[in-house]
Image 1 (cartoon, helix red, strand yellow):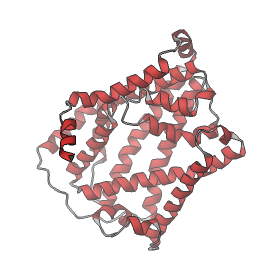
Image 2 (cartoon, helix red, strand yellow):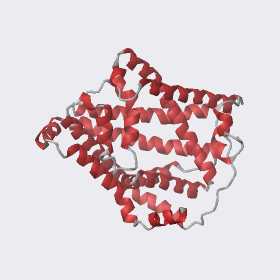
Image 3 (tube, rainbow, N blue to C red):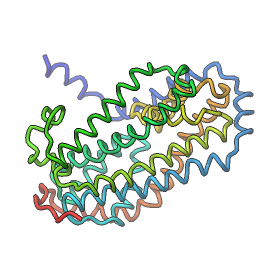
Image 4 (tube, rainbow, N blue to C red):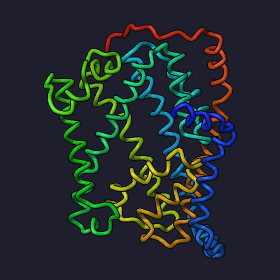
Length: 340
């Protein structure tokens, strides 16, 4: 039965699978725009501050590109061995071309490159990915606690579409897990969730958690959190550029969810998913035309800048990738370098 259900999926042409995000974007845009007053939409576009809008997207994109490369390079050096920053900088820039088509392709491209370039095993590589994004989510959770408290104090929580107690439950769970993970890996206090998730801390998957020092935890947060906050600040400034005036506390609390929805791989380059996210969380803070103009400009500007970055990086990236393709793909060297 399982085989018979899998075969029809395997027969779907590649072009059809790649067209799905375009179809999803088209359906979402049709839902939100089929009754749109195009005259009012154009009026909202002409009122926008385009200099602020362009800078609000471009500057965070360039900063995010640099720190994305930096954190990967540091983690590979800390937990595996030498890794070239400059070479990966251009490769990561070129991979933005894949991300436009489908974010999953971009993520897969980065992982395959790291596997071949650093000769790192998949188990260790996935563990490093888990370490990185685990710390990022924990850091965001810590930042959201004071802003959520302030939002409740100013009465903004009454207008949320997510139950505030559910929101608090998620944050408290995240903070608890962060504290437990710190005690587990740095003080050898093994209890709670850690004992259920980590059956053997010496397994290769847990290499990053096992080897990371306290300083490297803090450095990871220092490399991850500021670029993310700058990206959110850019979106906030972009909202102001299109006269969508969202209360700052509400924006800080819910913008991570907005970004998560925007970057879902179900839509092409964020078209449609951006409109969906802003319509769910922020539609009462601007006219329908202003939000429509904003949510069309944001994915268009991000895609344009990513294409430019990808094209600038492509030549240098292809030189390195061609060299890797000529090298036999073997499992990684198991040795690690001394921690910095």
